[in-house]
Image (tube, rainbow, N blue to C red; front, side, top):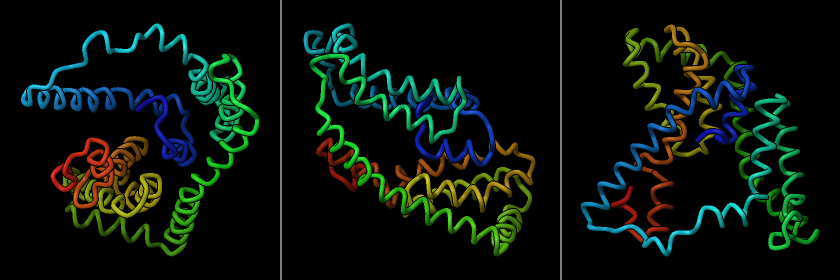
Length: 248
């Protein structure tokens, strides 16, 4: 969901050499359609089950919530401002956003943290980033090997041949490839590999590079919602205390 769309967007910026604002502007209509669809399904399911919303007295006040939590809006604003207006690199934008987080907590007494907590938070963030760094690094190695070995060109020829030159068939094959790749990899790694293997086939069929990469990006993300793996569905089932296999 724009404006923050995960690590894959920053990789797309580097691959296609396009501004951050161009990506989020193009993603807004798709995101709105997606959330409208989710809202509609949840609302219809709630009506079918006879579920009611929270009483008005239990709904948190927007004014009170903003009054208490407004400092936490500053880091995302800094990140978006640096990327969209100043147009610095993703690394520098992320750096200044992270630097602003502990500083923003000092703006209110209720959110103030100690420097020990800041160091502990940075340590936990580094540990949490290690699996992603490892996967993305290996995906980068795979990307280099695919390019050097010529496998990418061969794969492009094979997938175009399988589609019979039909654009709709090619898009369906691309969708299936992205979902299969995303079953065992995080979305960012699946996007990196499929962008090297499949995006050239889409561009050869006349699709603009940015459109091809956005198509691949969305279906790489959808792998987490798609059976038989569907890890997002299992997480949601655990939170909702629902049957896991039925949810998936």
